[in-house]
Image (cartoon, rainbow, N blue to C red; front, side, top):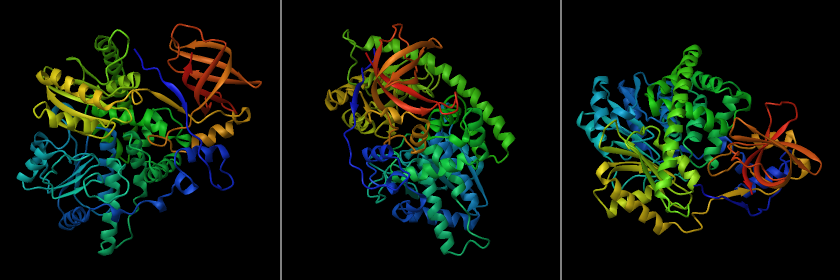
Length: 569
């Protein structure tokens, strides 16, 4: 059972005058994504939104006083890539700005659950903190923050998730998505919020005359900001693209921190050609694997060490854990496929939303399963697993489709059925929740009803968007490199895709799953690959495909390759 995507061309967009050197095709692609000039298309750090717009006077006062008093600041991270990079940025940045006593902590998914929980606070007592700084979480951690305050500690929340009806009793909160915040971009990742806090703190310390030997440079933190931003799949608006572009430039120049350089190496990526897609498909998953199956402290240590050999050793371990994660994910995904065959009606169409559960699933991998099933069905999907082996408490990870705000949907279910959900939080496209096993059936019914009421047939139709056809003379290495380097492409600023009809000159199966083609167009012979494209039937003599044009670094020279994303029958 799989949703059948529809090939749809983006509407044409007019282009203004662009500087020489910007290919006309690239200008057209930028315009179709809402960028009407070079400043919007390729934003620079000089045009970043100023930190003053992000309300954080109380936060800066807390940090400044803590640094002046020599207080122990503990940065509390999270167990995903955004949380790990935000934690590393917080620790590194505070030390750069002069904090003398900074350490970090991170919850273990299997032991503490999500965020600053009372059980994590109990363990943190041994560190004797004076100030906790949460990164990439905290806005929904009412109980944990109350426990920390009961210990006599101060708490600064830095987060980007949507708040609930009430805010936790922290001493200060920095979150562009809290009500009333005037920051124009609501798309900052957790690592971006922490970076902005450091920018504002540096300005405050500068005005107070606290820098006696020169002002610290925060630019070396942008490699971490780029990785966390891309991995968290937040929209790459103009502000985020400026941050990610700057971080990618550092990584391509070999100026990243030791841990990221080691992760690039173990991923077998060329740092000089690194893209946002490499972060999303190679770097991020290796960091995330630690938090999914082991302890994210290992990932954070990789990002904090300045010893490259130590970073290499940790990166090798993370690579092994990621291999284990892939094996677990493959098994769980196969089991999810079987579960889907039971929830779908005979006509092969899934309901408007799907909830999946298996008592043997791992809670650290359910988000990946939900994402895979969401892509396959083009439906909102929530995958559940026991919080720990044998537990009657479930942890769910939700993934959604455009037009259905998953966090708001959970809030609606919680309002209508107050006793079903334990905790929940998240974004428009991804969320997490907990509930009791005995509530799963009732929750599934309520969630499916919520989705059925909100999702129209148009929203349930999966579309593959194309930027139109390429001319025969545009299938060259220079254009492929211009497309690759014209980003960063990602969420909200999608990578260019094109479509066209080609003659199939030859084909063969690779690795029992993939199809390798030689395609013909206007007398040209073009190499193409369709990952997962072999279904047992040979392709016809002519095919209409949607594809990406990429440099073929494997063959080298001037070779290019079409990566097929959709092949119409």
